Image 1: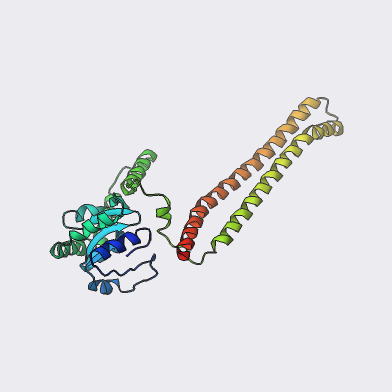
Image 2: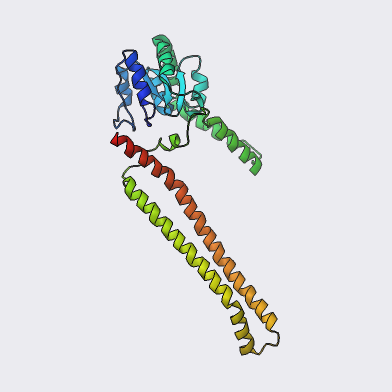
Length: 288
């Protein structure tokens, strides 16, 4: 069961070498199930991570915890509690998903140990335990007298990120992007054209603003002189200085607006480009 596909070839090869018939399920395979607890009853070993792995363990399957991001190994009674605290997710995927690692995990299959692990996950991952844990954490938070300061929040966030962070050095950031689907999206050619068009618009806007700034600078002195003549001011330098300050404040305001606009554009591109790369990868895979 998988939502990414870079490890599928290794799983297929490992199963073939062990004479294991392999079925594939999940977003990366195009096959889905609305009764997973029933469908999994016919299988001995499941290759999965996170919630999918927990579902399989609760049904009674032996679980090899792995996906395209990395490999942890065979779930068993020795590691189930520690791995459960990490949600059987990215935090335990410390090795690459290779044929050798997969075959080693398969060779450790133990139906009796898998049954014991299943009993544990039925107990700790069921509805009752889920509600109890939420109430416990809520009660603990309500009983805390001291509100955390910004430093405490930053440290807690950093600790959380470190705990779930990817540890296998051969992984790349786009593996995380590929966890999520992108339905009803345009083809790569259309996306590329859209990005190029947006880039041209941004360059045009930047050139226009630069030209406008030059024009404003060139007429500052003329405006100040005109004001001095019309109002009969005796101190043209003071008039020029005052007018310049007024114009500078107006320009600062426009620059602030422009900076906000640029920031929003950067955020858009930071979201858009990884998704665009994912679409390219999926499109190339379909062609293969």
